[in-house]
Length: 218
Image (cartoon, rainbow, N blue to C red; front, top):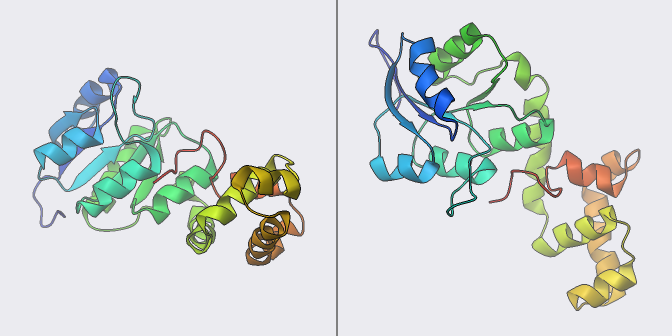
């Protein structure tokens, strides 16, 4: 679903803010907005044929089961769309996680509209957009790729250690021995030895976008 030639780019916006959905076609009249939707599920159901999907990260999930964050990025990217994140989210680890899940770029909602216009054109041409918002994110996304090497149990132990829980308590809660909990932590510490040399387990959890409230759940 990529653009080409001199034809006008086709765009879909996925945002739960009615003002954003209604306003973008007026602010970006050089593009053809084929759909303005409030959920990823609606986009995938309609299978709109567009060159770029402008995707917000924090979509309303209060009334129904809807995807947001990293899961939404992955779903839209896997469906074959070029995803450009358009968001107020500022946490670098969260934005980096979106890149690792297939997003082609990130533009903050506070950026000038000209920045968004250029980003849409670039992503529609199949490029990866390097806006100011993304400075340093590619390296961080590569780092976050190490998460794939952590088992579910290792993530659980990391989360517990980030909150100061003892190995004995972790073992009892997870129905494993304290020694096994220590072994899981040793594997995490070995994987991120350089980072943990100067940072805490809580820092590492935030750095990887695994902390409470992060938007990177699959």
